[in-house]
Image (spheres, rainbow, N blue to C red):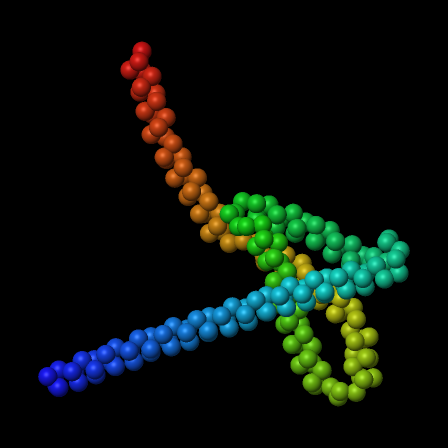
Length: 199
């Protein structure tokens, strides 16, 4: 009797330890997923923020003297024309897909934010090659002002160009339409046969 009771006690202890281990594993798994979600959200917000801030300051830089035509250079006119063409291209491609409007709006900003981060890392690497004196950094910025503006405008155009949705979304939509057409055809045939029988 004692052996049976001790066996029951050990089995219940093993079960409780096993269930406790499962609960701990589930809690650890959930906590890691929550942390991953928080970090993804923070990165998402940061990329959108730096993209919007960069575009805002770039437009301020273009129209800094508040004379609309005299402020804009030839390169900036080319940028605006290219931007409008790429925006129309992006809209026509995105319209054919099953993507939500939210994803269509956000995707170019995410790509632009990634480009800005890449440019910042590259700029920090270049600054490391020089001394950290204020005059040296200021002279570098002034010397490469046109290059930095060109990179900024090019990153906007490139982010809009590569933000086009994948063709898989278009193919999925076409498959759905074909399935709808296939399901509708037998009903049309049945109604036609029924009409013939009635005659």
